Length: 369
Ligand code: XIL
Image (cartoon, rainbow, N blue to C red; front, side):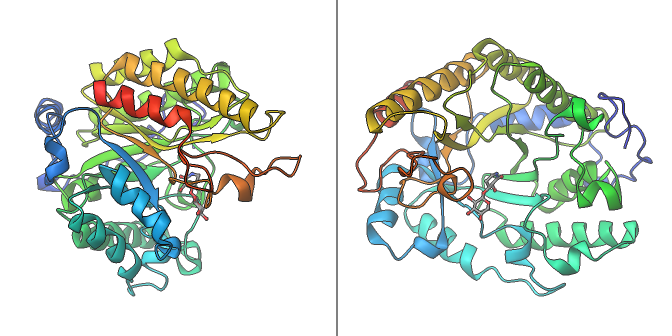
């Protein structure tokens, strides 16, 4: 891996382009602009405003209160975990789409949009995959995975997180632009263009997304992470490889300051490159907010409001997605619980399925969008 922050792929050998993906910069920007005019393939696409979505989990699907929230509130749903590598291909060549299909078939019956996450991540890889040591074998496994999964889902997903969390957590500390992952160690930085090329071939209509976290806060680490995201976008484009949007996860620390101007500038910079923007995993992390429900929800409203100011300030986001709908089931409680023993309140609806004030504001702003 290179130490040059702008040189994520520079050390990589040239990729042979497949005919179908050998687009000039001009032609794929044109295609992206045409697609950006509307989401393909669903009644919900026709409505005004920015689509709202949420991530749903198969294991809670039988909780009707939970399931009905998604049906009632969402223009879009996305399987939270069911399309991740280890769940879809637990053994090499043995694919299991049953969980994802259950959710996608349900959302299709509701006339909802859907999107997918993810082909490349440092987490949730099956043991057989991480046992691969040979770069050529890993490239084959990655391309085969993308082809099979994208093919299975073709026409059903508006977009894919092609790569997730590839940017170094703290680029200064790491001394390089990319996170040190199994993918980087075995295949090098070129796993990113390989994944985007394979996805573009396998699902020419789905929008292809670079997804990452910590792209909205104030401070040098976050400036660097935004710059690296832009650099990856430019390098893909310069190589003639299609990238349609950047996904900002939006796991918002309520005690941290959103850099509204920098976030808006980031959206505008992407727009200038012909690349869209979406929020993919919005929720609020409140473990450093003292007090009770009132204080926590006020801090959440502030951080979500600032986030939306920045997000909407640079370009019209393609969609805003929360990482679940109700505090009843949330990942924040598992990884960043509060020290005072109170439950976390990260999501639009509380554990009793009552909406938070910030959710109404969010919907109002998306409806105006
Ligand atoms: C999390 C899910 O919410 C959990 O259910 C799962 O156990 C682990 O993954 N960033 C991401 C998401 O990109 O995929 C993660 O989702 C949360 C952090």
